[in-house]
Amino acid sequence: MAGPVSKKILLVGASGRMGLAITRAAAESRQLRIVAAVDRPDDGVRPPVQGRDLGTLAGLAPLGVAVGADLDAALAGAAGNGETPDVMIDFSSPASTAAHLAACARAHVAALVGTTGLGADAEAAAQSAAARVPVLIAANTSVGVTLLAELVRAAARALPAEFDIEILDAHHRAKVDAPSGTALALGRAAAEGRGIDHDAARLPIDRNGPRREGGIGYSVVRAGDIVGEHEVVFAAAGERVVLGHIATDRTIFARGALRAADWLAIQSPGRYSMVDFLGLKTAV
Ligand code: NAD
Image (cartoon, rainbow, N blue to C red; front, side):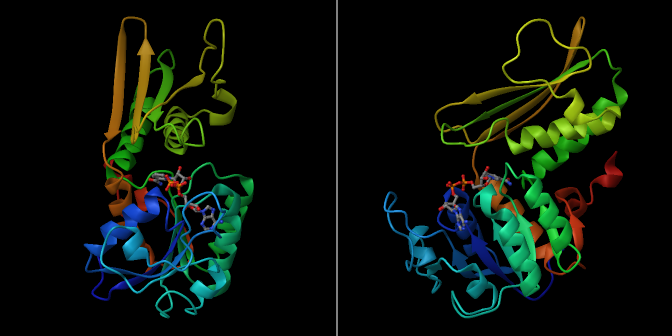
């Protein structure tokens, strides 16, 4: 449950699709306030955002928070509206996630990362940051997908190995990573449920010929403005079990991230997931 004191948010990737969705969702929240916003320096390609008011960029009334480029200054309360943040919410780019986590650890600010396509450097930085601050990394911050992952884990545990596991994801044409971070998280949940090693079982996307027995396969659609659709298919001879989730509005990720950030800001240092936040572990 949300605490009585309103939490102060530093938003990274503030002028992106998710950053602006979070800004709009935060405007409706009593528990959370955005006090600083960071996006990368203007690249001369997109419309400039540096120095612009985040509220105005999101189509709202001005927030009194100008978008800046200096994460350390924002963490120290020397940017945005001048308040020190309680929690960073990062929906930016995987290349800089490790550096963002290290900066949060130095500044003693909790870190929620929704950025996907993270590499080993981000995982290592998360482990080390978690010794000093609470860290939550979630490839999908919607409540529905968090539940779906737990259902997939339970189905994979219950169904015999003759059920092939195939994960389908569909997203808009601008999405960078494939399969999606959510698809991979669902694949890992299935592997855990079945008690197998995900990376060893993972099949290449562009495979030919008959399916390898016991493999976990991925199929990807990238087209138009699809917000995010995931399906996990357990297929055996004569029957299929299909579990899925369809996002029609990225507000669900924004609201989930804000609720999780509200919770994360008052946790002890350590690693957390959306499942910890929602308390779903006991559901299966
Ligand atoms: P986007 O490209 O619209 O926005 C990303 C923003 O981050 C851009 O404004 C960009 O300039 C900024 N940025 C990039 N590098 C930066 C840096 N080093 N410092 C500060 N800002 C930086 O992308 P998007 O659709 O908003 O998605 C952002 C990320 O969130 C992607 O990795 C995406 O896969 C992920 N995502 C996660 C969820 C979830 O539920 N966890 C949902 C949707 C998207």
